Structure formats: C-alpha cells, structure tokens
Image (cartoon, rainbow, N blue to C red; front, side, top):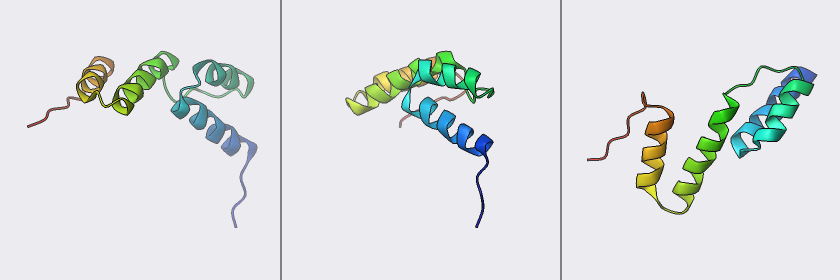
Length: 78
C-alpha cells in the first residue's frame, strides 16, 4: 500500500482545477501551495473554449481553436 504525501495531493488538486477550467482557483491554489503551474494559466480559457465547441458539436470551430492555441498540433481530416 502506498501513501500519498501532501505534495502529491496538492498536485492532484491542481490538475483537477486546471482540467476542469477553474482558472482563478488554480492560480490562487498554485500560490498558496507553492506549486509550479502545469500549464500557462492563460491557456485554460482557450482549452475551455475548445471543450465547449466540441460539446456543442462544432468540430470545425474546435479544430480552429486547437490550431490557434498550438500551431504545432495540426489536425487534418480526409
């Protein structure tokens, strides 16, 4: 049985906040827990826009937003 350290739990909390798009909470938690953010906080809003586009079925908008956020990731459909 493995044990979790407070650092492990803080990282887990941070990952959750980032993945779910809680930008301001992630920023504050990062400072309070003295953690290096796993991503640029400004990209969180863009990621949430991509998620919302996919959830409403607008794949073309999501692809455009992915390419705008990270041009190295090129998405092509045949």
